[in-house]
Structure formats: C-alpha cells, structure tokens
Image (tube, rainbow over all chains, first blue to last red):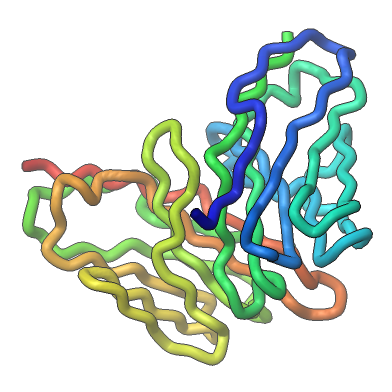
Length: 114
Length: 115
C-alpha cells in the first residue's frame, strides 16, 4: 500500500532532550516536507526537500533540523525541544515536487514538550 | 509572503444542501492549488489538485475552480451528506526560482452537515 508513515505517533518528552521523528514513504517520491499544525495558526511548513541531499527552510525552521540521505526517509530532529514546539507534526511527500502532483500526508505525530 | 485565507471558518448545513467553500491567496504566482479534507485527529486527505493553467477539477460530488488572476478558488460540494463533515483546507504551492517547493495552507473551513 502506497503510504507515508511517521513514528512515533505520540510522544511526550521534557525540555532539552533531543528527539527524532521519522518519516518514510514507499512511493519513490522526490519531494518530502514537514509541517506543524497549531490551533489558530494552521499548517505551517518547517522544512522541505526536493531530492536526496537537498533541503530548504520553510516558514518556521527555527529549532528544527532535517536530513535527506535516502529518497524514502526524511527525519525531523529537535536538538533541544522547548514547550513552544508542542504541536501536531505532519510529513508529506510528492512526486516531482508539488508543481504537478498532489502531496500525500502521513498520519501525524502529536508531540508534547513539558 | 503568500497568505491564504479561507472563509467561512465554520459552516453548518442540513443534509442535501449544496455548498461552496472559499479560498483566497495574495500572490497569484502559484503553480497549483490543492484542496484537502481533515477529520478530527487525523491526517490530511487530498481531494482535488488544480494546476495553475487549469480552471477547474471535478471528482464525484466535488468541483473545485481556480481564478488565478483574482487569487480565488472555490470548492463546491453537491448534495452534502453527514459523512462530509470535516475540516477542509486549501493549499497553494510555488515553483518559481525563489520559492520552489514552498507550500502555504489556509486555516480551513470546518463543515458540519446535519442529518
């Protein structure tokens, strides 16, 4: 089944403890992206990647890192999480970027930082 | 900076009614516009994608239109059903030199269809 998977789905952590949220897609998509969704602020793009070893900042990249060493994986790294990073995170992928093809979304990761 | 606005924020209609959701964007230099559905606590499901060169797309009871010059899109839902209750989001994407790969989402319209 074609899909985007995220792990973990739920995570509660403490301030400053490094964490990684994994994202994987099995559709051979070049483009992958991370978003966060907050009440009243909508979905905002954190980072995106047009292809392996190519990453770019979205609208809210502060406090996050990403890497794209393989086409299928695009992990989101929080080196020192803070409470303002408590949010619902979504990973998405698309074939040849968003220009011609629709984005497919993962199920989301609900992160709480205390 | 691109801004996407969706009006109304919430909408409640009786079952069977036809309805229109609105999406507007400030920068008309988009490459495509996509409509999504989000159920509570769930991820986003793609409904329709309209490329900038297109005027509309249809899928079943859904019809999305795009007027790029005026910065507007509408999602028309015919003969609404309680199962259509969800939040509907629109998103625009760019493919120009400075913004290639960027996507901007609206805040969504929460639709409730009453039996």
